[in-house]
Image (tube, rainbow, N blue to C red):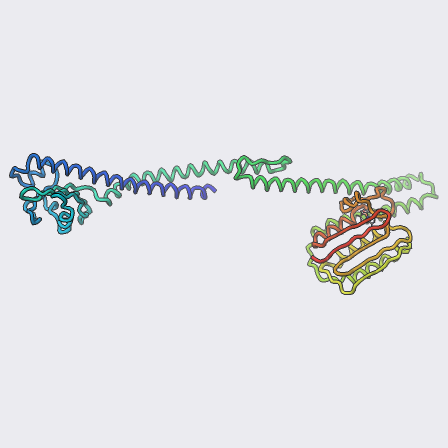
Length: 431
Ligand code: ADP
């Protein structure tokens, strides 16, 4: 991470250093040029005041005034020069002619082959043209002179960028670590110190809430399972102990055996339902086309004995060829739970209508019905309206299984009930 922060900081630092080096060089060059022009003006004034009338050669004037000196006639022909370097070139003469305003001209010569620049001043006197020259650093030389200090500044810049990126990284990491530490097993809401870290805090809070809910739901599930299992187990254990101790009269042994068998069966059925319920989440088997018209007819036949016990009339309104993408065992599970409930919670001589039409399954009964208050809870695990857990009563896992299967497949599940009149469960398979 520090590497990612280091690079942009370094780039900005280098850009700023380069920018300041260039502007500094330019300012320095203008300063040098300005100073040279000032020196030339002063020297020219001294010459005009003190030496213009005297017959002194260019070389002598040059050593007196400390500038390069060249005398030219009015046709711009060199008549005397202190050093050949100060003789005007063709282009210089053109420059002098163009800028020779009021008999005076000040200009900068192009750099010579050695890269030197020259600042010149020309003045016309009575009989000649006087040209003074000062050699200055060329722009390139000024830029080159900046390189050693630039290298030092770049090194300092790299070092500073490195330190800065380490500070920034450790600062950011410190708060991210703080958040991460708070995230572990935290029941409280986490607040981010900085607005930039708020999205991370939000995700952690959401995750923590999910974990808490999952934990709560797991705890509830375990407590319900143990509670539900306790009743048949206590009954089995009690009767078994009585038989083992020999204190149970022989006349009651048969009924005790029947109770043990019934409670074991109930326990087995409950374990099967718990396993079924848990298995839905892990079920990754591929769905295929299921003809629910045929399957419903088959499943309903299995309920004949139960229906007879209560003398319930079963009406079938099944349209042929209703196909749903699912698996046989899933649809069977749904039908088993809905139809067995419709029988269990029906009245003697009641009626059940099972409809399969328009991609819908409807199980309607004329049973005891469910109150509006209870309706809100019937899909919760281990919820049973009648808490007596009588012999025929279930454990409250049938409808949660149906709901979970529907949710997993994206089907809509509706329930409508009137106490004393009956209940209708409807599954809409269309996605
Ligand atoms: P159970 O195994 O107890 O039947 P379910 O999850 O299938 O568990 O149903 C939960 C509760 O909803 C039942 O205890 C019952 O009171 C109520 N219930 C379910 N189906 C019907 C129905 N068709 N008519 C009346 N009550 C029903």
